[in-house]
Amino acid sequence: MKLSHWGVALSLCSCLALIGCGQPQPTASSTGASTTESSDAQADESIVAAVDDSTAPAADGTETPEATDDAAETEEEVVVIEPGPDAQKAAQEALIYAEEGDVIEFAAGEFKLTKTLSLDDIKNVTIRGQGMDKTILNFADQQKGTGGEGILVKNADDFTIEDITLQDTPGDAIKVDGSHGLTMRSVKTWWSNGPHAENGAYGLYPVLSENILIEDCVAECASDAGIYVGQSKNIIVRRCRAEKNVAGIEIENCIGADVYENVATNNTGGLLVFSLPGLEQKNGSKCRVFNNKLYDNNHDNFAAPGNMVATVPPGTGVSVMANDQVEIFGNEIKNHKSTNCYIISFFTTQRKFEDAAYDPYPEAISVYDNKFEKGGYDPQKAWADVVAFFPDGKLPDIVYDGMVDEKKTVDGKLPEGKQIFIGDNGDFSFANIDYPKLMSGQPPELDFKLEAYSTELPKLPAITIPGVK
Image (tube, rainbow, N blue to C red):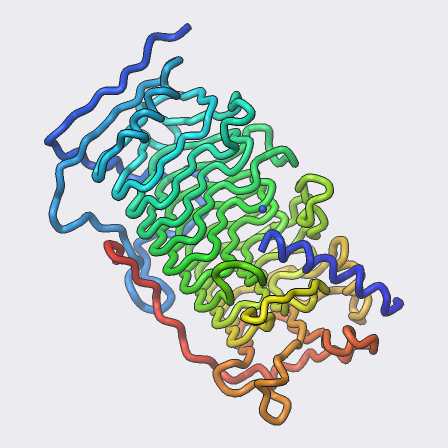
């Protein structure tokens, strides 16, 4: 193969970097000076079937965190929204006039909504239904010019949404921007026509937020990412299921995340941990990815033609780009056509950037105690060109681009604490693809040996969130 083909192959990473995806009148009844218990989280049956018992100890030996109520109960105003032709008005008015501690409760049934529901600048508000299989907010008839999101929340601290489904939004299903204290529990987002380019980009979409708990949720058929957390701090994503999205779960430019006991299957790419330049929060770090099941993420890419993510090849389990201090352990990662796991720098995108504060290199990455099976057997799109360098015609389970910041090296190696650690992953394969030589137009010297990657890194601490143990 000609070296010029490598530029085509690298388009894979370029795309992934931007994923860095006539009824009765309703009533709105209120009850004051009383305490209403939140309904139990009702996980989708597919989660229950596919994810291990949530009470099992975490891989680091601690108990699996559980959400806890505040020590002191406070009175809450509960506004109940019933299905019907005036549900849109009743729900939006309840959100407009909401005060701290209020609960906006949707009754069981299907709500046909025509505009974005929005909440701004109110602390400690809860939106809840009766269960993700019982309360459905349907935005299929949403009017143009009324917002693309299903629910849009801005600057609302201690916000909770639970036990509800949002479907068929023109844009993002749920976007939360600038929240300190956010819980998404037993929420489902999906598009009923299946994977399609016209679906909204994101299912669950918190950004520029802190202390985020996403648990027992389901995200299907998003044209970019099912569960996307961007430019945020202190994050837990657990016991969720992402299926039939372009990207299943994506953690982008975030600092401090625990992503565990999730299932990502039948996406184009399973789980992504990225850092991109030019964003308000830079240089993502301190992310633990553990005890997840990532398998069969080989779905055809259905992003809209012309979008950069439209050329992402199917068949990747877990992907790390330009992040530091990422710990990947205890996962089941199997049956990915292109590769089960890759670790790359931003340089592989071949895109220029002028962000002096951005660090494009992946450093302090640990991959150990995972179970890899059947990866790289049929590389797709750009990966098909990459595999031409491999004598057996297959990509290994773990692919590393070999890019290091020479300003940090000592005797040509990264100093202790910044190295790549590839530990015992059972029966697996590995390769350093020597991107520096490829970038200079020389044939790569593929390195399959693990000796240079055998120095362990310190374990990252568990993420702690107030009110969650």
